[in-house]
Length: 165
Length: 166
Image (cartoon, rainbow over all chains, first blue to last red; front, side):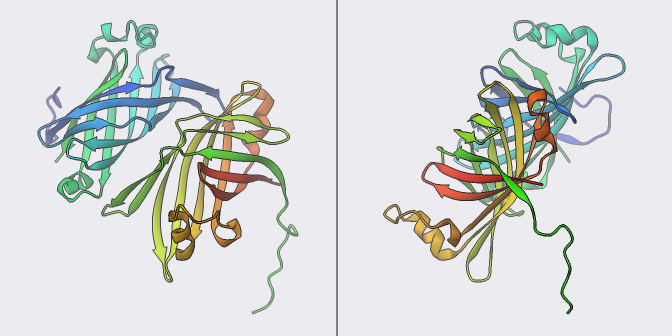
């Protein structure tokens, strides 16, 4: 994944694979304000030149979903999670984001058996993670903003994360 | 300074439910980052019981609190919690709350001592302010409630007596 023709300076951070809990998303229905779907995190792995480890179970995406004028599914992403590096540092990872699935892709998109047949450019899935850790050797993570390019998988999600320089 | 007159009389409330939040995995103390000290506890289950509202607290929520201290060793913490409840008649409710904890140093010491008896909740302060969100029409009234909970620490988590503010 690249940032295309833009001049935005970025540096690879890591790839992330996350498995969601069985039964995700839990649809809470339409309250007076929003339509929430909560996806609990079952686990995962992140791998990059400067950090690698596991995504801890628990934490979730407390997402809110809607539909735009064209009938596309638009989802607001709101994740809180904890990652543990292979050398034992705990990192609190949170991200907002947006996932837009065009109306024509929605049926396939919502079917775990078919979602991986969609090409990554047939929908748009972007996140902006920030990090918090007390581990001094990963202190540099506290100081950066990242951008992630996402794709849905049968089991959950995958991201390619880039540090915005 | 002249006495301040409070309109509304006293603060009126009525019992809403008692909620037991199980936190069986313990609290993850994240340590001191440049921003502060975060303590994360995930909800592993529980239940809530009240006249109009009863059911199970689902695993998967949590409290992403920040801890601090003020003079005299009083540990002061925030609450930033999210939880999902399911009533016995099948309604799903999103519960979120902020709040404050204030625990004197000697109480913290007793919490940490496995041999110490339970501490009288009057000796420490756990207060939450839940709001509720549901699409279920039978519980639509709950969307319009601000509640306050008074907490008691338990071996398995926290029990909150929750009152709906009128």
